[in-house]
Length: 214
Image 1 (cartoon, rainbow, N blue to C red):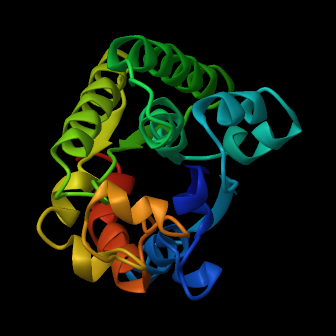
Image 2: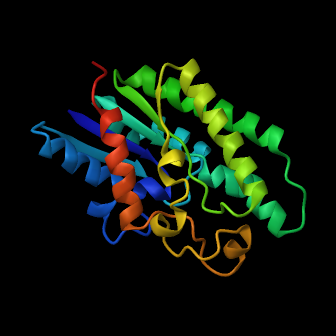
């Protein structure tokens, strides 16, 4: 089995103590522990939006997907930051409708591109909420996850409900977690990435989605 993980800084392993302790490497290790011959590839960069990932899939880096048996797609956090967090920080209104419509078009293009260049099974990961004590953040995350679920369903991809695995456990699973409010994002580095424990939780839940459906 060849497993390719595509995405942004979370998939890249930001805030994990090492790349091996990020969820793609941990999931791969779990597959091997289950007596499966498996290899893995990560196509992800910190700061990538859905636009950046789509561009990569049309370039030379698409080779990471072409031979894959299963591909996980985790994208949308940067899109959400740009559409909601930054305008709010600058005292500007954030328009959810147009932002989600643009994200859905790009996510659909990503999944269509993977289908076109690969026979891999596709698993889309939902986004957990790093700011559970800010109601507006919760609403935006719900809209993002709804968009992911709708596009995945239309494109025949499975959905791994990562948001459920983190719900109520954010303080233990997110690196630098403070108060769980958007205000935390305005005080230095963004407390949004999983810590080692968070990556383990993702990998543990994800393994079942990487295996072929019986």
